[in-house]
Image 1: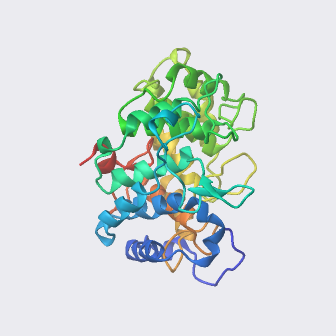
Image 2: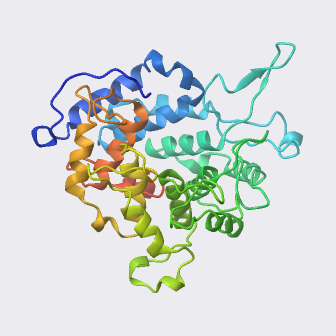
Length: 359
């Protein structure tokens, strides 16, 4: 929520520090009751829950939630076939719905009929379940992955729902993350996905959401994280001959480092203002590439503190009210900066290392 309301408080980063306790209280509040301005995001309730629960995991505060309640709620959002004959014939994706209201929709007669599940919701569902310690082998992953493979397009990209929608790098990342968490790559053709990703690298080194589009920090994260998850990025990218890489690493690195602005924050695109979330989207890519040593960490730390709310959480820009999206990625950024008291991140999965390993 990019609200207009601001307040006066001292935003000098030298006078404030990372306030872990307030961030925990902010996420606890969101866990108990989502404020009314989020009503328009109700269909994405599972994604909002991912920000809260994974955020508490970063803060080492998972004891503040009832894990059994969370598990039962998430599992209740999984799509299931009406009968065995319908399993794969109708092309439906048997992942997870974004919320209770998206599980059903009304036809012209007002009758409630099942609605399709979504790849982004499925990624968030599995990330939440993994975070709270649920054994993902208990899920019918074979059906989920087989139905997900039906969403992959001839060019290697994915559409997020079986009824059709935009296709871009976001859903390639979702597919790769889902396969990685379920420890099976039967849900996608990795070679096709790789070729699609490579077609999205722009002349300036970054990646656009689709081939030929403007380079963008979020799209570039999806591209690089997907390649990492699928095993196409080798170790020591910065020390090897550039001609041996499947992507143009020197050009990508140049584009990434240009995204850190004078105020210390990262921008998502050229000539755009800095924004809390890109400290993760861009900073995370630099971590994957082994190039985060080139970040001006002191300046980034200072910028992020100007976006830290006195009520807990983070805003998109300095002096705005906090929101869940930017709060989560602000916490991710501080984890990348190795803030004391925070769990380390598995950058390519968007969850903590402890969760990714399964400890």
